Image (cartoon, rainbow, N blue to C red; front, side, top):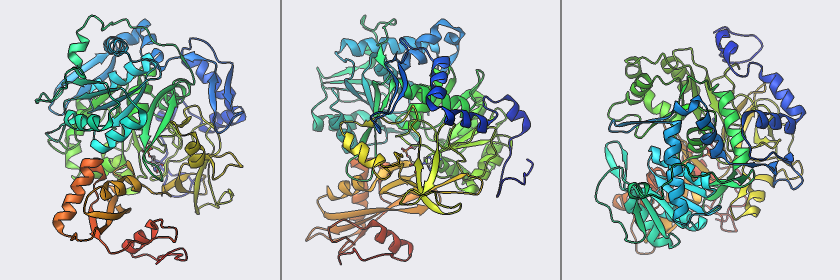
Length: 634
Ligand code: PRX
């Protein structure tokens, strides 16, 4: 690709034939149009691309900011746009979802077939007493029924709360209890690297502890013997065979601002918080960003290799691909099982045209060398994507050269559970710089500022802020509006800016380089974990009196977790106890939260008010300057 003198650094320009055929060829023009009249911009998109049962009176109501409202007064259901409306067009017979299990089993659902299953399950849920605004917890592996369950909830106006299938008892229990879910949808087990993870067993433990769940619906996936509690537990396949499972179940008419789901994510303090998204704005935002950033065309086979249990999967596996009428691919298992070329095999077999994954996966696959991808025909690929953490330029270049064969632009999308959709991202027509997520999506004004809110000069680190509201923005923290205001809107309350909690730099060309979290959130392999959750799991072990954990940079996983524990009197530190503690955290939260090491210490650096100074621990581990220690107690 040609070098252009206008942009600084390492720049990759899109080939003219790519620019010619993409949805948005001139980012600047569209962005300016959006900034000139934000409600007008989103109102036009919403009117032209979606079906509404009743129109809005106002596109954006900012009178009670930061409690913004979008498409006020409109009636809609996202599922009507994802499934119902496609039944009247040729999309009906198109593949909505192509699935391959880790063992090689395959299934395809057309839009008609997916709708059939969703309708049936929606009416089952209704028959079991699930009503509009009831919370339903879903805890499953990466299988089509997870998608069906989410869509069935949204269809009847129930609020789903999906708990990632890699979480364990305590994490599941907390989320069930906080959301006060009466129904849990789970499966007997899920498959990963040839092993079975016994989800029903974990679910039983969590449900016993929580006490709010009255009904459990269990999908049979792995087939081992599981304990079913009579009266409480039902097999999915039994329910779906009852006459109540109506393939023509009606879709609930919702307000645009009615919640579609809550999703728990880790924050700075305390327990994970539930981020709330809505039917109207979330639909408009996710579908528009998918269509423009990944340039979805009718013939594409889109593979978002995330898990539906995270926001990436909610937005870009389950909801937006269906709304835009795309064909999605879903794979159940691990990228390297049984061999390190499983993914490349899948790309070739299904003719994947767009692959969207996380830097940690790319780095993991990179380790195995180029021979594995080179064995496969990857020529169907035309676009690549990255999400979840900063992508290091080396991994970017490998992805670009070895997987994309130097012809696929890489969309490095920065966003969050809270933002609902891509916020800082290139479009395929834009010049790329490895490691930069480039610019704000049209209509999204992004900046890097200092404590006072002044834009920092190019090359200097500062706080990332978002200065304009967007349709898919979170509406609140479920049951905790104060926390919503405090966490995201208080730092720059005067200016009314959103604070994501990341630090970043801007370069001379206005490109954004996200550096990482500024709070006590650790990104491990792209997973978002809070120090508080892991510490609380550690101190729930009988040998531990106090604990602190920090994230330390790691080449493969982005960060790893290091734990520091003060033992209870009479306890002794040993390798065995260290292993026990790691397993304990795995059992409580999930394997992803296991500290890589646990050190036994006599004291922890604390402020005089007793707050653990994790930055001091981190500086010590990294051999850096300890910084300002004036608030240190001891
Ligand atoms: O630190 C940023 C990082 O992931 C955080 C959000 O995590 P989560 O809510 O789990 O959502 C992840 C998937 C959308 C952000 O605050 N992050 C996400 N994408 C990027 C990123 N950091 C750098 N570059 C990205 N592309």
